[in-house]
Length: 44
Image (cartoon, rainbow, N blue to C red; front, side, top):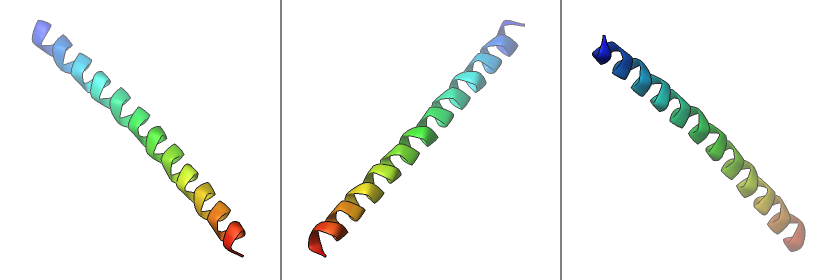
């Protein structure tokens, strides 16, 4: 019983970390896109 609870706990922990990582990479991508747009407007 305890082994099963530990497995469930680690799956939930891993899922939470994975989902928060996706949000972080999405935000990073948006920041890079805005930086690229700023550089393009400054050069043009």
